[in-house]
Image (cartoon, rainbow, N blue to C red):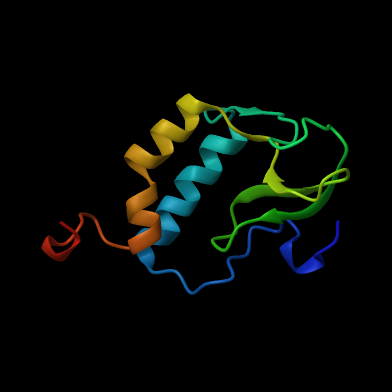
Length: 109
């Protein structure tokens, strides 16, 4: 792995509030419990399977494997959540994790 600070240790890079910590835990449990399924993908540009792992977590400390293509240099996620897992994540946890509030404020709309 290229970036040791992005090792999948579960430690967030940001200061999270109570709701964000709750959502992080909920997502982690769904990943660990295989509720959120993942799929391997090749490079979207050249379709190469040759890749090098750059990092394993996102800024929240969640599992998020990022690779660089060994042939064309594209940076991409693989394995990544399946479409149904992404749908559930964005419908249930994303906004609370990202904004740290239960519901979007009026200014959002």
